[in-house]
Length: 181
View 1 (cartoon, rainbow, N blue to C red):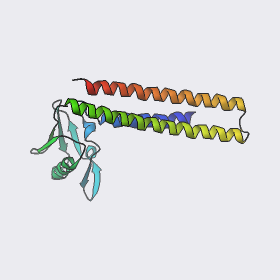
View 2 (view 1 turned 120 degrees about the horizontal axis):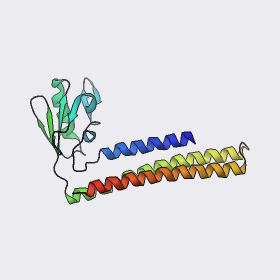
View 3 (view 1 turned 180 degrees about the vertical axis):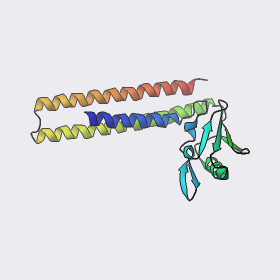
View 4 (view 1 turned 45 degrees about the vertical axis):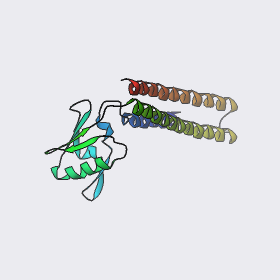
């Protein structure tokens, strides 16, 4: 069951990372850190090119390690379709200002949250199905008894339920954050 739990932990971690990128009325580095910037003849995430701080709850200040790439970072931020922030270049940094979340935007983010939750649950179900097929194969090849097969199937279901509950709990907490004015 260790490999199943490990797969599901990875799904849960990926789900948490996805949710950290959802704006909840407060700017945070995870909103921009993975945006790719064309620099040095390659594409690199902003987090590897600059420091990102939150001077105010609705702002991010991005200070590149190399001042010559400031325009490249600004271009990447401006062309990002998801990011809904105004971008202004200062002397050696870029300031992103996020508008306050409207009721409509909050509801839209709750829908996105629902999609991300469903996607995570689908990955959990896929991991469960793969493990169930593995147990079934072992039983058909007479590697495990019928009692062991049923015991393992119950263990698999228990682990699956545990992770589905974790996804639901995290989703409910995030929804509460999104709807809080």
